[in-house]
Length: 382
Image (cartoon, rainbow, N blue to C red; front, side, top):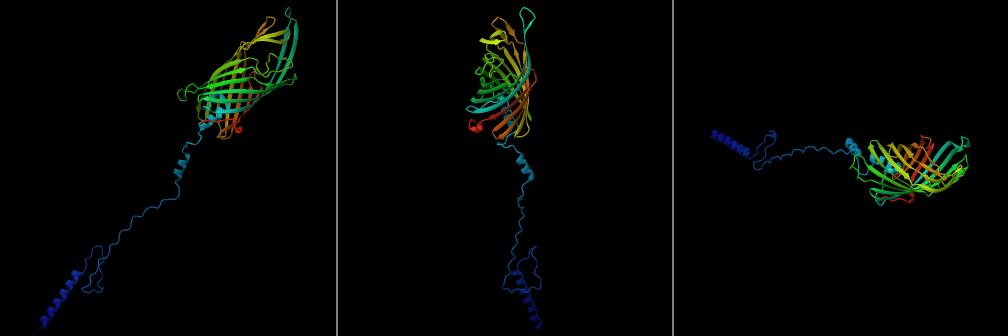
């Protein structure tokens, strides 16, 4: 009997353990097993499965607040639409110095003031021989040291985008200390035009055609007393033309021009010239050329160096006694350097210094060119 009771007790104990094991949740490989020392729960209480912990998200890098130096430098060096390029700056300063190469936009106009000073010194021998013998009737040594100051106001207007017309009004003052001669007054009015027949980029080099006409509004050298007076003009009508071109080669621009002009015959003169009376004058014609270069030192300063030379042919003088005198070919050459200074984004002032290289040229030339846009005497059309 006792053995039977013991066997039934063991069977009941094992049955209870089986029921407990069936009610207990399965343990996954990733779940830690509860230690044996943990007290067992009652048969009616189910142990909940442990909640799975989500895996941590991958760490995202925090954007740097420090600018990329290489990118910033690259952006700073990029050309912007509002930036002034070297070629544009050089083109502006070059055309402000050498206006025969510039054109104004249609409807644009401007007024420019030019100051010029020249000094011309020479010694001339005035010799006259008797017509019937070799006797010297007159021998005179003339010393000249002429100082001339010219104030010129030039108005230019863009008739078309490729055609600009100009007009110049000079005021002249001259003095010759050795003879005490002087002259003050209006010079010769000059009208001109600059035309660019071909659009830029359609020819290997840009071409500008030039034309001018001069009216003798100043005092004529053929109506004054040459011993006591001086002239402020050339004394005859003249007209001329030419062609110019330029080439930009960083960091300079090269330029050149060819020109020719002719004067109209002047008659009806009565000027005493020694023992003869000058009755007529034919100016002949003049041909010339010029060349040079402009260099931009920086945005505000530029340097221009130019050489110009002209030749006068077939000048003829007629006298009341029938004599005709033809002068030999004369030549005038000058070497000029100009310094352009930008005083505002749209205003460039030029100062020039030149020297004569032939006996027929002025010894010294000084110049100053100043746009009068600060007086409201200009209009620029974009």
